[in-house]
Length: 84
Figure 1 (spheres, rainbow, N blue to C red):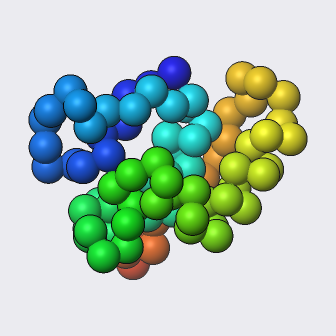
Figure 2 (cartoon, rainbow, N blue to C red; figure 1 turned 180 degrees about the vertical axis):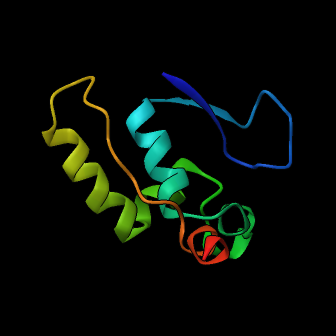
């Protein structure tokens, strides 16, 4: 289990969720920090993440895998562009 800050700029202990490593990697692989901070996208809550179709699709895959399997994720879109 890993800690995930739902609101990335806040350091409050109230906005931290304990999630599995695969889910945490998936969140940071699918979304940039800017997208996670954007309140309009609604990714700053567990409910908001569960309404995102990309994340729900990835969760379906994670549920099918053997527990403890490492999930390989590409980096979020804007980070990939900067490296080129």
